[in-house]
Image (tube, rainbow, N blue to C red):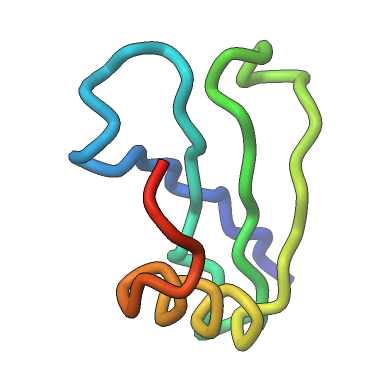
Length: 71
């Protein structure tokens, strides 16, 4: 069995300010998960939150629809 490595990326809207959330969507189709982490933490040993892909998709749709208000 091959273990896939998450390919992390940060939104282009984050402006590289260091307060970013990184996601690895490459695992969604094969494993049904989207790992999420805080880029301020050590990215090699810091915590990772694993979100079901369906929940992540629903969250992103809500953000795009403006359901969470402006910051």
